[in-house]
Image (cartoon, rainbow over all chains, first blue to last red; front, top):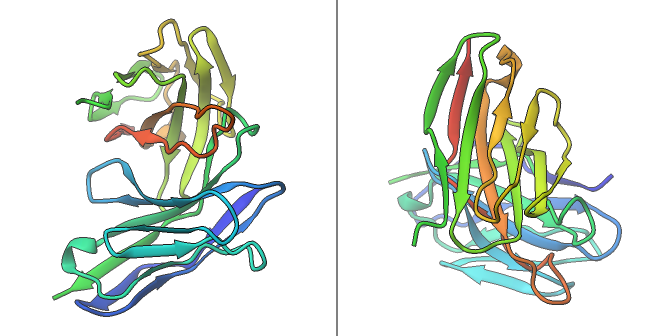
Length: 114
Length: 117
């Protein structure tokens, strides 16, 4: 079945470091891909999305490109801040699959130190 | 601009007790979902609904029930609580975009942390 795999955490970085969180997926058809962020004690918030191959999603300095050839959607940020400390989830969605449910990776915890 | 509202935020149940987790959304979304989040496991779909009066099972429905009598509300019922149901529960909603619903993001509530002892 369809699935999403993320790099394991926790990831610990110093402020202003470069961030990459790897995400690969397995899916038939043409899913849309998403990154969600969860701050402590809160629900998940959409960070960015891409709906077709070669699309680049971006928001708040984060970027991810939908690579169909490598089935990947890696999250990157050039310079992280302490406020970026959170858990990041990669997810895919297909219209015809259980009401368009999101299929999530296991999440990657990011801790940014000053 | 409330979005998706879940109550309660926290709850402790004894084994065998029952409870209802409430979820309401004010965005007139057709689709609603219940997920549970366990450490290191991501989120798993419990039940979903594509509109009032229509519900269906997700990946992990055992031990739960849902109803959808209105567009706004999607309560999750635990009938006989078990320790395996200790988790954080998230309700979410989305609206299909004309022609394709997979582009629309899901909007999440802040979750209910449930402990069963």
